[in-house]
Length: 191
Image 1 (cartoon, rainbow, N blue to C red):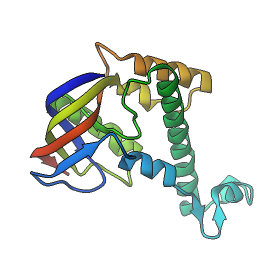
Image 2 (cartoon, rainbow, N blue to C red):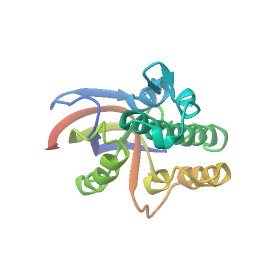
Image 3 (cartoon, helix red, strand yellow):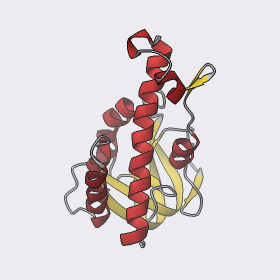
């Protein structure tokens, strides 16, 4: 983790921001962790586990199929984040928690590289804006490309977490975890 005082770029997904908004990260759960840990999966009166045991997949309605796919994807995402947090706490405790940080990039161009992946991964929660932040705090840069593979074995996920937390001098998809105080200084793009 490095001390940082400068500009970062953030893709806003949960609530639009305005120039002058002040943000603090590092002591409480972020919106991403709240979302993944509060997710529930139900269709009508049945939770997804009951649903998949109630009839053959070929008889699923469109809503039942969509909710089952969402359950599979978000469960893999939850498992990934739990593994990342476990490895961080045990082997890289000085790194910022992904569950309390804000996800940023070092440039507007790097932020734009994330847009297709975020639209694909979260079609119901698409990006809203890209903002420029004046930030003072601590940063860690990892390779976000390691986060895009959810279906590997547990052992492979643990090894990928170690690679992620080891940091990268040449990430395929830069991901900067920031904890500290920031202010929105510019809205660069709105979707």
